[in-house]
Length: 197
Image (cartoon, rainbow, N blue to C red; front, side, top):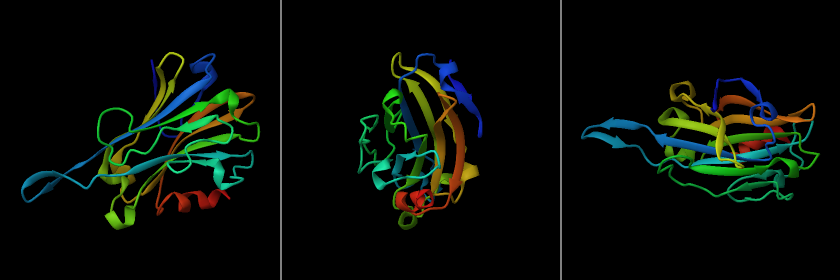
């Protein structure tokens, strides 16, 4: 049974999924309904973009190629594959998926930071407070079992346009995960990555 993580909670992937090698990080969301003069209508479609920042032991990005996102779908090592951009969040289940092959991750990468930002947020006047049912989850691809899930609560993120969702990191020779859930105000992925150089 999957662990429902709380903000700041850490788990050992080795303990929760012994023999784990390949994981899928899935991100899903729905657009909150809004009341208008003619009753319920849906707000503009949201384009949430999931990305992975591959950090060294000092918590820094060495190059721009260490950011895996919709315009750089593959890590140079072949260890990380972004399965593409969902422009609307329409449909059930995972809206964006990222595959991580843990044994292939180069030794110079100590931490994978899973982030999401709202594309064109300023122009569209959108924030995470307008999103509902947002979640990030890790799945063991060997058996398709969900290991852990972290669900975001929309009101807590009113006005926030970027999110540091979770981190998968090496510690004492094993991989662990932390649910971060930190909302930030940022205009796009580039601005989000600036603090990591």
